[in-house]
Length: 77
Image 1 (cartoon, rainbow, N blue to C red):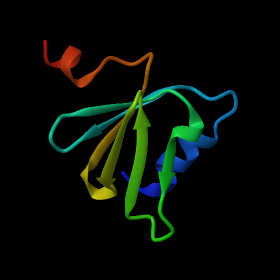
Image 2 (image 1 turned 60 degrees about the vertical axis):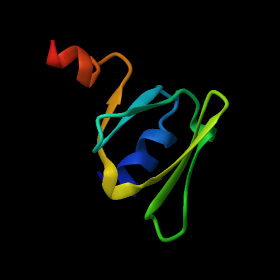
Image 3 (image 1 turned 180 degrees about the horizontal axis):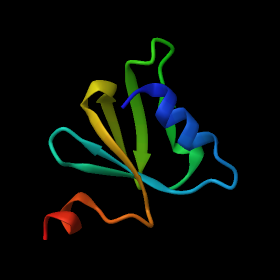
């Protein structure tokens, strides 16, 4: 996963909410396009989820899935 993939998902109109799955299997839900920032060097992502901020190194993002797709947990069942 790279910054261009995430930026492309953020720029879709109409916006489609998506999940970012991390290398730890943790998932971050992105419900609005303006709740994610990527730094200039495109190495770090800052995401607001509810009232929590997540700071993530981009290499730790292993998957981007749109909400209509099953979660990693659902696939494991």
